[in-house]
Length: 274
Image (cartoon, rainbow, N blue to C red; front, side, top):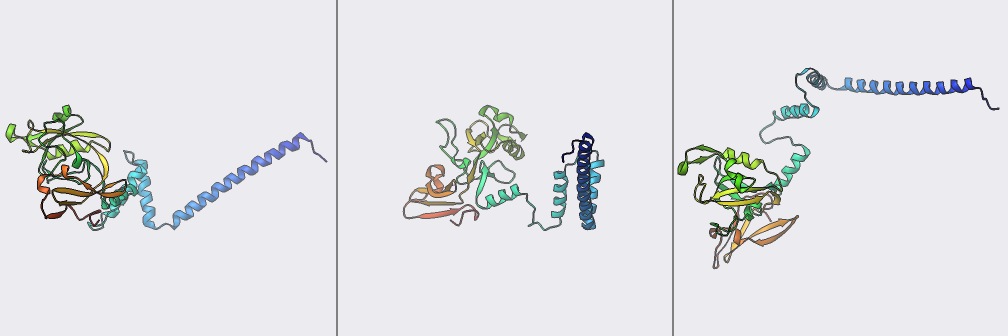
């Protein structure tokens, strides 16, 4: 028999709402009970660390995010290790692994310590293949050891504003390596930087070549093979490697003729064993 009493239906709906509320409260109670049980099972040192985190984030005059706090904790923990140990995030670790395989990004230039003289343009890097502007350039292709970078800018016209003098004038001018480093650090993969390059001295500004170089991700080759007046590197493109004739990108000193041949190992690293 059907009960059509409106008061009975109203009471049924009320009971449903009541039981729903009880279920929510019970779930919340179980959650917090579980949390506190978990918290109390933590070592006292961990509880102290969480207490410090709460105090810093609630009472310090500047905001400290969770990431900032835990980064500081990790830095402190790693500081007790020796100089050969370090902590890396997942992204940082990927960079380290790539580096060990010869994969890098940027210009591919390295300088002698505290100097604007090029120590090396990594084989197969953007700097290695760079070409000076103009048909009357002092050289045709490639940046090489012994050249000087005396300026850098987003365009040829901006170079003078991005490289700082630290002493002297004219032939005695001395340029700042730190200013060069700062200027180059402002560019990312895909950007083109215009370098002012001299083959004469580190303070030359007039008799220079303007060399545009586009930063890129590349796989460095550490071995140069020279024979019969030609030079080769084992170059990687999209993970595949092949011997590539790079004679036009290296100096005459890197080439030999006749029956002579040699292998130049720039660094025993990455894919050098190949």
